[in-house]
Image (tube, rainbow, N blue to C red; front, side, top):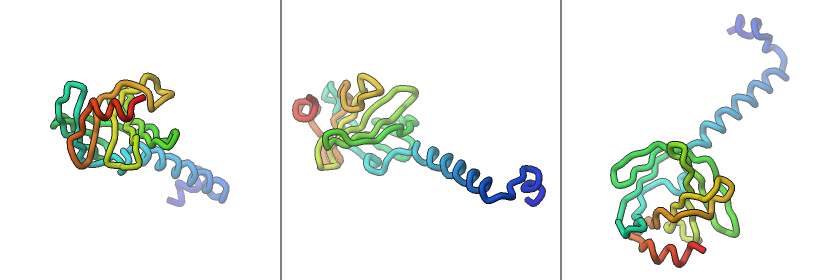
Length: 143
């Protein structure tokens, strides 16, 4: 270890602080790729064809009726009191939106653009407690 320190001249406090900042930044970036605990878990869902599905989110995978996909979380925010999370799966962007204060109700959309996570095509109506009705959720929460 001493040879490493001598070779790269990590003797000054300033250099150690810079290295520590870089390492913390890298770790923060890695941790930021995991899905939020807010939307992790099992969701009862319905699509536009009125097909009922189970969607299960873990830290890095989403399972839709048994088909498993890797994803990363790339955004989070609140706009006009609506909490949302952006995720990327195989290069495609999706949003998980919590349109009400009840965090057991959510929507998954495919956004129209990467600049607006709240506007797009509704893919799934989602509920943690019971199977939602896609059309009712669309009428109530999509403007």
